[in-house]
Image (cartoon, rainbow, N blue to C red; front, side, top):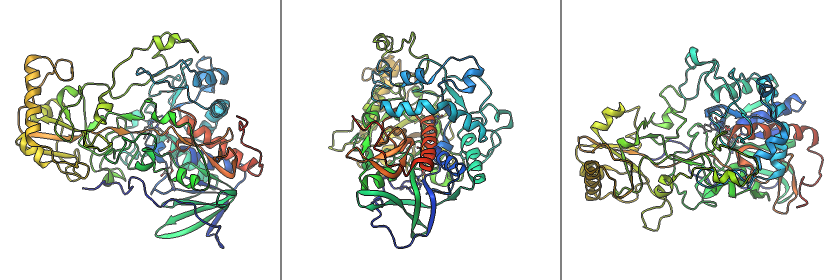
Length: 583
Ligand SMILES: Cc1cc2nc3c(=O)[nH]c(=O)nc-3n(C[C@H](O)[C@H](O)[C@H](O)COP(=O)(O)OP(=O)(O)OC[C@H]3O[C@@H](n4cnc5c(N)ncnc54)[C@H](O)[C@@H]3O)c2cc1C
């Protein structure tokens, strides 16, 4: 009943690699860690500038979260696509948007207030060329005007979201190409990462799969240049030399329980269904390896602020991985790790959600999370205090109530179970067997009575038995609310359906963790900076492993990969102080 993913929640194998080795097993000018949006971009840019490049990737295939993503890429500032559709935008406007203190999420959390101005400036200044670079490297965008669909934290002054067409590429979610009718219009990370992989191979980049970076070599433990990386591969430890630079593109830290709890102690091990897993993890290995040689973290508020999709209510239940925009199907190369497709919830009126003790805790129909899109602030006036007044504040506390816990001294909320009956199964047209639900993994249970169901719920994270009488009492009370039409406990809008027809079911419905928005301190050139504010020579980072920028996703990662790849080739020997270090 353990996680199907081989990624433990925070492996302890990352440390400083120790003194430089006598012999290197491989070497290149630039060594890139991770083959996702940051790493693949950096590798291509560096190789095309004449450097030899090795990419190490710990998984069986390339792509990271980027290949599992929706492929919605918010690049603005006046891209050729924006110009083609008559959309006025500029780097200056984009900069002001992404540092606009006045914008808040509908729950009151500010989107951009805590962004590092220097990092955002570098980002906005390369949006236009990065967009053209993607097109020149085989990425086909859906042929329509930029919009805000699928985007959050894109800035509010102009439509900027572009969508990577899936084209003919087999999708990692199914193992199959998309329906030919959808290939030109469906946005998908497969349509981003497969063309970039082809471009990287074409440029001579050496991609080493199933090679896990476990440490960085530096001249002295916390001083001097970074010289290379230690790698685990097939049970052996290898040393890979980087003649000019190492670029960290490891994708963030929210899959590492110990690491993520530095910013939010509630995020204990039961939150095991990270978005993007099990294709790849965000195990903090890049952050930990860099910190072991002196690197600093940066912009940590952006992780605790309740932004966008950092934490979400699951959209599918009965499976370990229930993130709203990602389903795994039996043809996928990782389906054996994913375990099931999951049951998408069309209407939360069809279930109640209970904690480990069988007690309800909040109205089930509460929103998954709030997020701002372009136009969600209406009217929007840049820098205006009135923007906050124009937000409709919506309670979104299902998540916070789910994570509040049961008062037993444990920090996390424990498993959350959706409870429903055979009538709900009919209404939702659910199939309650494999591959749709994961009974073998302990994420789905069924029984003829509620008492029997409570008794059956046993799995790794259910640290206490669910008292059968609790579940019976909870359901009886809820059924009473259905009769009276009023949820006296949590104010669910008119409860509609009794839970009364056997068999009864319990499906995993625990919160899902998504973005990392904190990480290593970098400067405008994506050079990693140490605890004393000094650049660590020969070390770069971008994407979700870099801190200081609360924008969700791909644009940030691609642009920082672009900046890091270019700088590493042309300027990595330049030992100038961190840009912006004067503050
Ligand atoms: C389901 C889903 C949908 C999304 N949709 C969108 C969207 O539509 N638009 C958007 O802008 N963003 C989206 N995102 C977010 C976006 O995919 C990420 O922000 C982006 O991929 C981050 O890029 P990265 O390079 O930092 O990390 P990744 O793309 O995750 O790449 C990191 C890579 O590093 C590898 N790695 C990690 N540690 C090691 C190690 N020690 N040794 C070797 N390799 C290692 C990983 O295996 C992985 O391949 C989505 C994410 C998910 C999960």
